[in-house]
Structures are given as structure tokens and as C-alpha cells.
Image 1 (cartoon, rainbow, N blue to C red):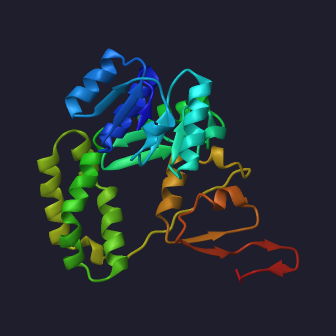
Image 2: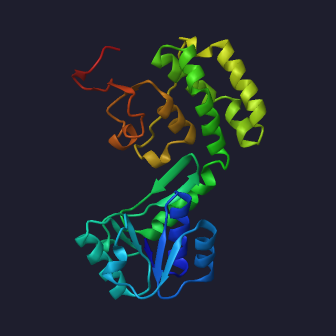
Image 3: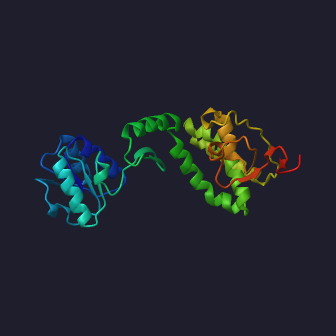
Length: 265
């Protein structure tokens, strides 16, 4: 249920609509955009003042009016009825926060500051919108269609992981990004037939940590750190940089200082 019928309520309704929600709109005034959305999707509308009875049968509530008294009443009533409630731009009245969304379905990136800085989140969303390829959702869909075939081809989890890492770094992704999905499928078939996941040969990279500031790492350094299965590091590598390493990677400390050598040369 959405309480409010203006521009902000419309944005929330559009987001919930894309998620497959069945909506009921409660407001004293309904914008043309909101009414059009409701008509197109079969949503119900009540043009009347809010009251606690409006929450009957609601599974989730969003309050998006410009009246603080109404928003507060919605929050109080929802909490009394154990209904999750979000009040736009009023974190103290919420029981859940709606994150900012970068939607490349089935790839979805959610960004939240727990209500502490909406402007900062907007900037982070803009950054992600510019960095994440528009067709990455198609790439995810393509990979999904090959998951069972890859599982049948490689019985070992490590082999499957190695195969997918090589595919992601190959021209398959660029073909999808440029709209050449059929060519990408041909390339996938070829790589799967070649069985490149069976290769046991690894690579060693040296990554300089610089003065310890993770923001000074190059994009290539970050990519290699995310890719590495085993990471050797010394005492000059900061904790902030270590946090950039893939969570399941094996980390081996090889630091040295006077009279304290953790490993032999």
C-alpha cells in the first residue's frame, strides 16, 4: 500500500510495480501519472483521507505524502499492526529502508546509507550507472543458460570456477555488450568444447600496494586482487587493502622485520 498520490509516491509505485507488487494507492489527490500507472496495471485507488482502517490487509506500507502528521500516523499505525513501513525521507519513522537501485535485471545493485545521506547515495548510483554496462543483464542470462552444461562438463568446483573466470575475461562479455549475443554463444560453445577449465597452469602477478591508501590502487590491481586464489602480503600492506581481496582467497603473511621473519626467503 502507498499513502500518497504525488510525484514521489509515483516513483515508489513504479519501483514496486517493476518488482511485481500488487498495489493499493490511498490519497486525497491522485496525479495523472499515478492514475495512469494504476489503470495500466490494475491497481486499486482510494481517493480519501488516510485513516488507520486503510491498512487493513496491507502487507507493506510506504508513506509518501508532504504532510508530516499523516506520515507519522501511517508509521504509528503500521508499527502497531506489525506491518513493515517506509516513510520517505524520514528514517526515524521507518522499519525498513528502500535502497537506491541500479537495475540491469537479473543483475540488481542496491545502494543504501541507512537513511543517513540520500544525496551521497544518489552520487554513488550515478557512478554505478556509468560503470555498469547496459547489457550486463543479458550477459548474466547467457551465463545462466550455460550453467548446467558447465556443471556437466566439469565435475570439480575449482575447474568450474576457473572456466567461468576465463569466460568473464574473454571476448564473450564484449560481444554481448555490443549486441552480438549470437556470436557470444558461438564463442561460449567453442570454449566449453575446448575444455579450457581443465588447465592447471596458474599465473603470478606482483601488485604494488603503494603508501597503503586503497583509493590509489589501479583498476588492474583491483581486478587481479579479486581474481587471485592465493595472496602473499607483507607488513606494509594495510588492512584496508587486504579487505579488497576476494573473501574466499587464501591469504599468506610473508612480512619481515628485524629478528622476525615469518617465512624463509
